[in-house]
Amino acid sequence: MKKFFQRFIGIEDTPHKIAAGAATGIFLGVLPGPGVTASIVIASILRINRLAAIAGAVATNHWTTIFMFPLAAAVGCFALGGSKANIIEQFNQAYSLGFKFLFSQKILIDIVLPLTVGFVAVSGAIALVFYFLTFSFVIMRKESRTVS
Image 1 (cartoon, rainbow, N blue to C red):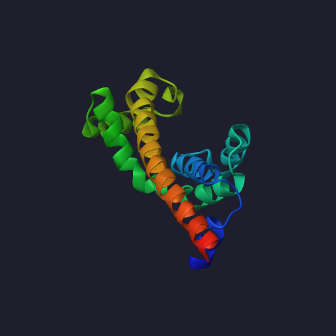
Image 2: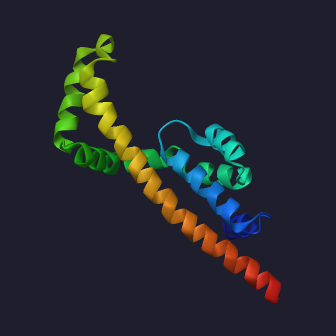
């Protein structure tokens, strides 16, 4: 892990591009779905470091979604004026209705929208924190190299 971290911080690019790449990868890795492929595409479009974006997505891909689900539900419900208990109840009711109600208002508005808002907010906050952490570490690493 230490060796990976040293290589990651040692990527030859500007600190902003490395940190932005890592933050983009982390953001997309925490969200359910997009992951590594979306990180490569978005990093290429934004002209930020693709290697850092891949590393961020791989470090957080899918396993964090499970842990972030309750927090995303709480944040999404809070932002949209609902309750976490209500979203669980809505999910259980919709689940019992079967596949034909997959795109119903109950599913899309009452369940998917709060979860989407919550995941975007939580992922964005985590990515922002890691942008500043990565940026600081890269700056310190580059300064220590020039002093040595």
